[in-house]
Image (cartoon, rainbow, N blue to C red):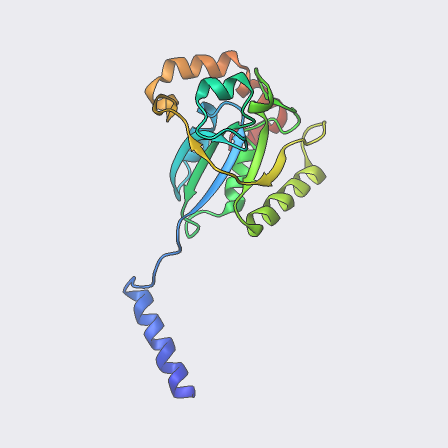
Length: 201
């Protein structure tokens, strides 16, 4: 038995050294933080994030359009779906980045955008994500650097519908319009009030 164990360990070592062990499968995380234009870049720049897609989730209408979601009748939230490599970045890190890019005290709005479609939410995909999301919220409630009740929802993920192509990576396609919107919406000013030096990080 000892010989078999030694052989097995040696085999695993050789596989690891040769890079032959299968990589952990990519995972997804879904967050709503108001305007999805403003939630792409914070995740895009993180090492280990493979892709970020703007879209709609949490509603009751199939294949909703931007106009339908914006009107507020579909129940969806503007959101982003993050595909990431858990071997390079943890879900905890994504949660931290999420919190520091939203106003968790605002109910059914984020910054200048008002309505249930602009609510903040964490849509968990499995029990482990739920556990980590609740843990992070509890930790934030115990040590929050701001006043006010945290109203961000933590709810099961439902069908995610990618938004229209012109919305995808809007900050890259239309940098001037994006910057003007972000400034006029007061997003960065409010984030600084809430999070100080950790704003956006």
